[in-house]
Amino acid sequence: MEKKESQPIKRDTLDFIFEYTKNAPEIQLKDAEALDNKVIQILSISSVIIGLIAFATSKGGLHTSALVSLGTALVAYTGLALSAFIHLKGSSYRRSLQADKLWEMFWEDDVSEIKHSLVKDISEAYAFNKGQIDKKRRTLLAVVICGATEVIAVGIFLISAFLP
Image (tube, one colour):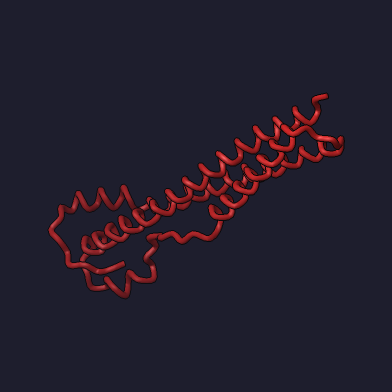
């Protein structure tokens, strides 16, 4: 959080913006956690689905179409696992909990100046977190696409494996 010279701003406007945005970074963290949970659920389900292949491989003597769909399923599952790893690896987020800095930086300032600095910091944190969450949304999309491809390939594999 950087202290900036106070600019003229209406107190009501400042109060409104502060009240409206003060919890935004915390809400973003909950959004990111929800995206993480979705990826974990999809990865778990996909792991079970890939395990269905074991039922059909015990039969032996697979058709070419079954082998192609098996390869597709394995590639899709690998892509899903890699995408999930990228998604779940540590991401940094900014929060706007300034308890440790408020006294040091603003002990002699007017309340409106403090609020103005906090609103600026919250805005910067929101913009930073938005970029991080957008990355997570893209990796979630990759996980969903790979998962759907895997499900289709495993389905085709199971059907092909049991054809005469």
